[in-house]
Image (cartoon, rainbow, N blue to C red; front, top):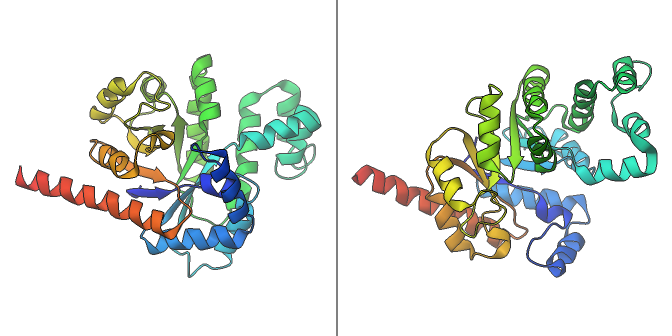
Length: 294
């Protein structure tokens, strides 16, 4: 995985600091061209991996990338599924069976007979596989080496003790998409322990890691201990602590933690993108220098 990964919160009006900024971002990115322009700025800054939800608008972005293969030949996307709001709204409007009909690929009771039987027999693992296929359809032909399960599902399954679903997700991603599974969580220590019990060693985990203890279940001290053990490939997200920490201080903290393989961030302006990338690279260089001296 690349050291720096670009996220998508800003494109869909997700802002932990203020509703006003969310509204401004919603207006700024109402057109797909604005999203592509920002992705291109990130690419110019040296960031070639985009981690995104399976929001419906991402399908349009994927079409643009597919239609420009030379420009985006080394560009990678890390899909994060499911986009929970999409399914929650669909279940409310259509019911469970209607939602499956809406989102599974192909004909629900015809060519995808497996899907119909899965619903009738309540074979939830088969339903999960169908929904993964539905979410991945928009990424056909695009390099997706890591596919993530969103924290809303990861942590729900974790809380219910249903680790077998997490293991099944990882196995299906590897078998069907020749990719690695990643897990987004707000409880890194517990998730890592449970994945290891399920036989998943050195998993890819994306977790909130920041100086402010923001969304870090178990607390910062336990996180730092877990991180120091180097038992997983870690992506740090929400490094600004929901806006509680100034960017220079936040990036210095996370950049200097051991065993954090990647840092995920989102930004909407060229200046913020370039400053974030340069700051992380600066602290990485300093750390390498100190190690060389030692």
